[in-house]
Length: 160
Image 1 (cartoon, rainbow, N blue to C red):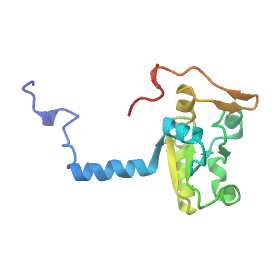
Image 2: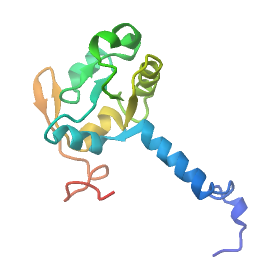
Image 3: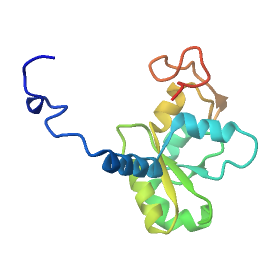
């Protein structure tokens, strides 16, 4: 250990939260977010996954590719069309392009304000494709080779 004070380091410049506070924070985070791999596994399992996936991107983006079975509901149309397309009794998982886009967050907020139980899929469509999951386009179903930086190279999951 070097002699520099831990307070000078950005990592510990603000002390970690107490374990109970940290547990509450991380539990809450899991209530708001879903991982791409977990969503894919739930959709691939036999039976009803218990949620509906909603792609909140534009029609042009939807046509480029989307999660199989997803409902297309652009963020700007959530307030107008959610009641017609979604059942309030079924939890919703929203996604947009990727981690650099907050469209899924904005759509999740709008849906929550309308009374839906909702989570956001972390990584969005970008990580769905990068992890090698099948997707649908206007030309049919496609799949790309998994990116080894985002998906395990020789395993069904990352083990987390």
